[in-house]
Length: 167
Image 1 (cartoon, rainbow, N blue to C red):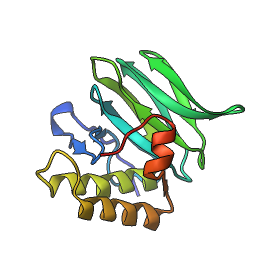
Image 2 (image 1 turned 45 degrees about the horizontal axis):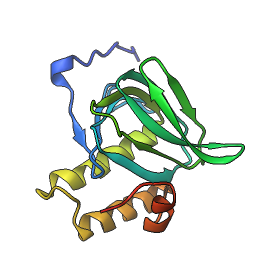
Image 3 (image 1 turned 180 degrees about the vertical axis):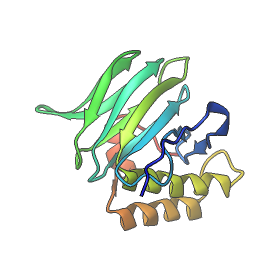
Image 4 (image 1 turned 180 degrees about the horizontal axis):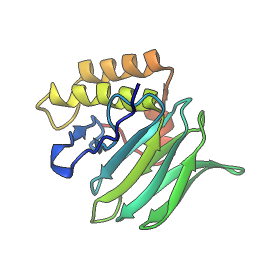
């Protein structure tokens, strides 16, 4: 079978709005099985709550700056990342994001195709709701999607302990 090159033009991408306020734009074809390339954006004032997943992911910051909560030898620590910085998060490590700047932070993200599929499912929750904050039903479905994929979500208390207030 012949392998063909696929191009995803800028004006033909789908923007996925996630329940936490972050936006993801898949750049690799959805048929790809090995990996997923995404352009992610965290608007000012938005946090991606504490979580972990078995899938590794890497971030290259294209613009703006944001805090990344990462596991270090000393425990969880906030690190500020800006344009040109690179972060690799090994599978199974707890992490979170928050943008306390006045500008959006945009990053190129590589991850497994499995994580890309989970993000697409999570984005459907936002499209189904007109509310600014996810409903209890949407949060429950987010938890169900995460559990089905084997992902861990931090509790309200665990997020508060690292400075993230959940609505």
